[in-house]
Length: 243
Image (cartoon, rainbow, N blue to C red; front, side, top):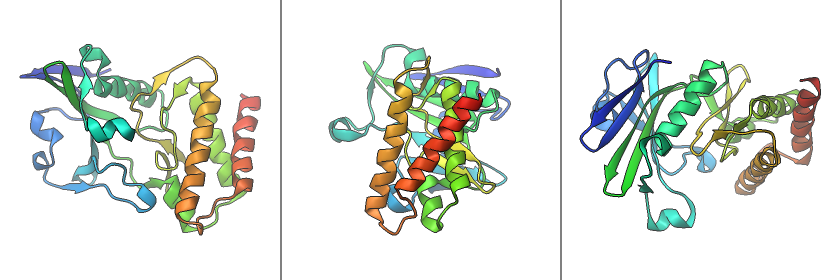
């Protein structure tokens, strides 16, 4: 691990010197990069408007500001109670991604993370290396009808994460991504963790199923049906039996 922590006036920055050899607070703003582009997407795949691509090709990064969702997010936009540096959402996600990427799992490699304290609260940001030529599962199945083998591969990929004990707190049709070779990646591990086998595995599958049905509700022409979900489950359980 090439983890380095630098103290700032009101917090700290955690980064990987092998990826970003110099870091500053400006890197966590659009103005700190020669190019910055707010991430947008069809079928609500752009998230909460808190994510942008920064830097130039061939190495681009994804900068994400942590924001609350749901009803709480309407009242408290981006602040969290500070209970220790190692418990900040940015540092926890950075370290989880670092562990997974080091084990050759299909996740973004973390570059830097920071938190800024304001009294008993803090705000946070994370920078990851952009995965080239990927799109959300929602976009991928909007393009055309996908084969049974593809849906089985999605299920098998999810099993790979579950077998490693990787809990994803928000597995949905946007955070599951597909690259140009049809391989499956997983993004956004905020509140993710490593867990022993348990009920959470079924819960994350159910969350993805609800998400796919919701996306289909936004666009009934989307190529998703009950048979596709059964194919995904078949791939998941086939992978579990052969493990």
